[in-house]
Image (cartoon, rainbow, N blue to C red; front, side):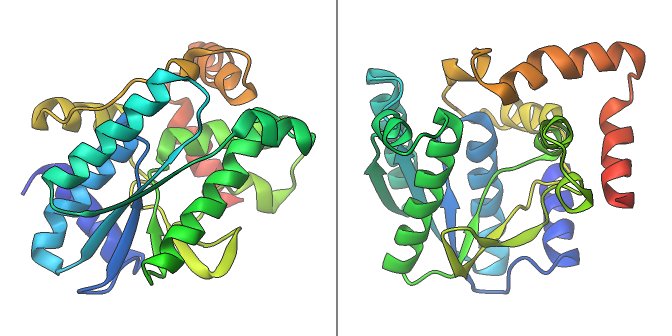
Length: 234
């Protein structure tokens, strides 16, 4: 078993994320993080008997690229012989009609879709690919918005879906840095899709990721470890 597979298996056990033989819906965008999550859970399911299904929401924000993402994830799911469910969402018009940012509109529609997919498949648990770097970015995102201690403590390993409290979100990668996920993908030759919007500075989270965090790392190279420790204390 690969080192990362062992780490994830230990985290799942320590935080009681899944039971043996459990049905799990994995949210897969086609990007690095979710493709690594899918690969890890698929491999570990051979040991723990988990029944995995794959869900993908096409946000229709990048035209043909978004459609290509959907086809890619569907093909991967078929190759692994996993159930696949997808929908398309008009995020731009939804954001405009509801006076939301593109980020917030996409998040709301994504959670609503995942909850619908879970109910359709009679699954109570959704695995999402949030990792340690996401936690650090979220800390600064909430800090500049004036969050209190609950907000600054970040994401939990388990939480209720904001779209359906009967459904649980789990985050098996929460303590893993992005660089570890990338190394795993390279070693295992896991294919994934690059989302060009991740580089756009039009989104607040991306400005934190590409401008604020790198700047702070010049002052404190161990920034991620320091912030994660602070979040645990909080």
